[in-house]
Length: 143
Ligand code: HEC
Image 1 (cartoon, rainbow, N blue to C red):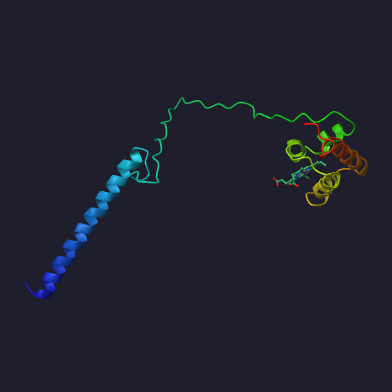
Image 2: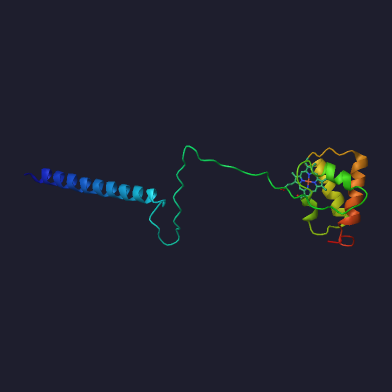
């Protein structure tokens, strides 16, 4: 055997050994996948439960989406707030704020109209601002 063909044979051996290793690793990873693990669990990885097997008669159900509108304070302007301020989001956006100064509420309502495009007639806008000032400022907020 020439030196050249010896080197060729050695290279072929190394390549086939590498291929065998890659094939084995693939088989191992596949086995782990079957067990529900994407990789053998090592530090920092958590194993994941295998997905449940679906059957042809499996049934899935879901209930009504739970909505818990917050209780707004009673008072003049409440109806306008509930009507106009719940078009895009829950009125919880109001109650989940900390008590805000009157000027901030006014700016909020202006932002809803100018920036987010809320269409609220001027008369209702005034009522809404009045309502928020009466019930949701640091001086007036009860709960
Ligand atoms: C046209 C849709 C729309 C209407 C109507 C609307 N909002 Fe909003 N509001 C938004 C959007 C969009 C945000 C930002 C949402 C986010 O950041 O998750 C927001 C956020 C808020 C926030 C959280 C603070 C902030 O500035 O992001 C408050 C408080 C609020 N709205 C109050 C009101 C009040 C009071 C009204 C009635 C006058 C109102 N919204 C009506 C779209 C609207």
